[in-house]
Amino acid sequence: MCLAVPLQVVEVITGSDELLDPGVALVAGDGIRREVRLEMVDRIPAVGEYVIIHAGFAIRTLTEEEAEYNLSLMRRMAEVLEEEGRLPGEPECS
Amino acid sequence: MKRAITIEPITRIEGHARIRIDLDESGRVSDARVEITALRGFEQFVIGRPAEEIPRIVTRICGICPWMHHLAAVKAIDGCFGVSPPPAGNLLRELAQVLAHIHDKILHFFFLAAPDFVLGPESDYSVRNVMGLVRSEPELAARVVRMRQLALAMLERFAGKAIHPVAGVVGGFARPMDAGEQRDLLADGQVLLDFACQSLAFAKERIFSRFVEEMLSLGSVTTGFLGTVDAQGSLRLYDGLLRLMDPGGGLVEFPVEEYDQFLAEHVEPWSYAKMVYARSWGEGISLDSSQPRGIYRANTLARINVCDHIATPRAQEELEAFRELFGRPAQGTLLYHWARLIELVYACERTLELLADERIVEPLVHHVVEPGAGRGIGHVEAPRGTLLHEYATDGNGCITRANLIVGTTHNVAPMQLCVRQAADRLIGNGAADEEILNRIEMAVRAYDP
Image 1 (cartoon, helix red, strand yellow):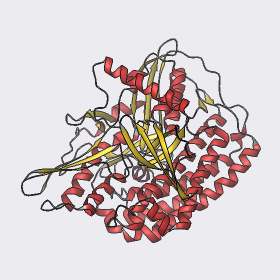
Image 2 (image 1 turned 45 degrees about the vertical axis):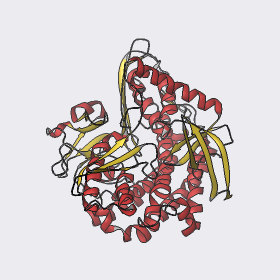
Image 3 (image 1 turned 90 degrees about the vertical axis):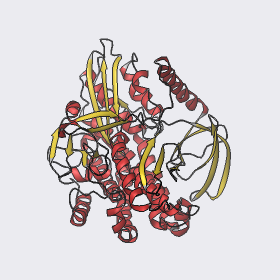
């Protein structure tokens, strides 16, 4: 399964056109820091909010509260695997 | 000198996939693999949870295509509790599903795939992205963005927030649609259909015609196919019989409850990756590119191949034209894009059909449900292939067993073959420049892993 790990927006760089060039967001999480494009996102995120990314595009914006809940579910999922002696993060098919 | 080429991240598939190509001393390809990275554990995580929660929880974890998981899960739990939704419940669920397909297909084709074709795989990556498309086709790009937003707005209008769907409930749908919503959505649906038809016409004239040779040769492999059809053999996305086509075109059909008699799961020691193969062919699985065994594909081209026809007129016309050119089954990997646009036309026509069905505004949208012991399997055709959720529940309606087969799983094995084929064909004497690597990526991008 393709996990939708939310990453937190640390900066929004506005583009030249609201519709065609909405710019990019810098996101960070789990030691990753990268730029994502905003053409496809359902709502332009504010700094501190989270986005779900697919193929280099932010596709959905989540409030902090929504993202925290999703992340807590994922953490619990990882714990279940660890309890079973299987490390999370091994290559797996989605 | 032996060496390994790693393409990471796959340009627009960041975070999900990695291609590794090994070269021998003479610079010939000795191995090529696609590794898909994701975290497993959902099946273990849900054990003991109340089954009604699953359709809501799964969308928070598999958030790339939340509606598909939401609906496959809710259908499976219907099965556990022995309930069938009333007509309006099913119509509203299907409408949500086809709208989510429309949104996804616009995203995939125009934003992830089209830049390769519009600008050409040989152009510099810095312009071979969506902004390059905006610069070369500004009017089209603006329309694409608006249409994708329209599909999302339509979905939210009757089904609530698109981020974490909750509108599918065990036994049916959360709330009825009123006549005003029905009327507005019909008008919007017509706009989407016009756009879909124009998109396909644009792609055929301006894009596909330039790439016909590439579409038939790049990453081309001969496999079977899996999709869903109704009793008349027409394409279905929301429900129906699974239909498995062997590489020679022979067909078997089965209800999803019998999937494990026809499909089997397999793990390759080098990858931890779950793969699925056609058990019913009785030949096991082999990824040997010269003689693959047991391998079939899912996703758009597969669905277009397995169906006998499409029950909506514009999409049927396009299907006939496609078959005229490429036969049945069509095997070219890049034809997934063409098939994706035929499905886009179908999804728009189906949107109008569903909205024209007067039962869609009936006030009874769900039945009362008694949680209890049972087993249920729910499936839908998701953008990336056949998606299957299977659960068993105890007397309190809590999950005791879960198994998921997601769209990309079906395509993990054939993607290995495609990458190997593309690498063998394109890399000679160890020479692999940017353009060659991009072409290899294109073979993987067709599957939208």
